[in-house]
Image (cartoon, rainbow, N blue to C red; front, side, top):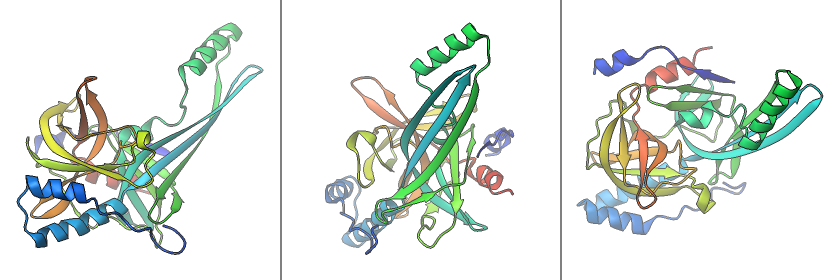
Length: 289
């Protein structure tokens, strides 16, 4: 089941592993060396950051959404299916449910994943037979952790169109816990700030989540809501959508956004992430009975 938070939130803008145990996590030494070059850390802070990076990677889940649908037009029956892969992060637990943060488009358009070929066929046959298509769709959302080597089936998904945030809800269990990091819901980021995004890039067929780092190079209004979105020079790939974006604040990782899309030209590619300004409203909405 999928729900949309449609209520106006503009006032917010105006007011200001495997059965035998977890798999070992490779520490990304080149990344850490690069980070030490860009930011002046002593050894103790680097060790703290290394530990937090491990926690962040272990808390990044692959979202596997499989859609099966049947379209009937008169006596014609068309069956098809589709699978997508993206990224999400557990951020909240309440009333025996755990909530994963992702991007809006990860959960908002999965009910009828039609290809253009099917779309053209359905439209042509509907006109020829003068009958309206009957569509039946079945959606399954699985949250996968390579470190646990476990999949968990989700119940519901929700999204909010102003900051383009999505939430996936599933029953709590002994394995999945919310991230232990601070969440910045005030969009207190600036051009030049250093950020890190985590995700499951499809092109790399990643077994574990990857991490990329870069800078905020531009801040633009997220139309039509006029909320800001952030352009970053991190290396982004399909599948990273919905992944967490962290910044280092007071020496610790802080969740500051969610990956939205790839932008740029054929020569230069940038990533776009959205802030968490409307996250509280989305969580409140998705936690209602």
